[in-house]
Length: 205
Image 1: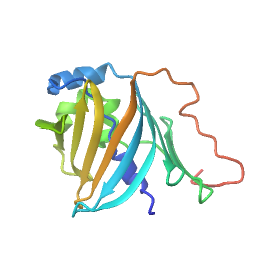
Image 2: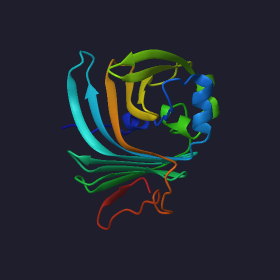
Image 3: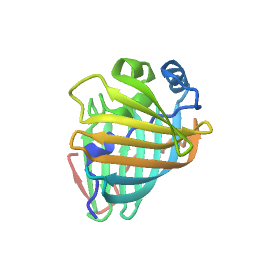
Image 4: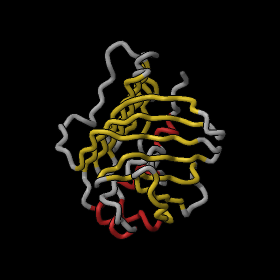
């Protein structure tokens, strides 16, 4: 099974909404009070004809304004860590670590909205789509043209983010369904600290 490339992973958003009645203003206020976020997820990738191409499972942890931890544990082991200064990716199967300066890599991606909620309405047109199968869906369309995705859709139920879909410019859709969502969990000091395992190749350091 082909592994997701790093650009696709950065486009996986970490939005959290609070209720079926949310509007753009309430969404911004909610995110302003969100400092950390943690959830398990099942990720599915669909081609432009809606055929499922990939399925994987993992854990995502985010800390405002610029740190995240993304771990895939099925069907492969793959880890991404952004510590605010550097961006690390570790492929256990290849025994390889790639490190880059974090810099502006994540700017203009939905992932950064978690740490910069004030930019939400400036960067996206927000539309409340409606309820499907008990989930309330929102669609966020980027106002800028130089993004790698067309839109992001978010589903909520009972004050909890249930699913997220991103449609890229090639018609491919990445869908995440969340479980065990925790708003503002207490995180260990070392959660976003990455030390390459002994014996692996480190590229870019």
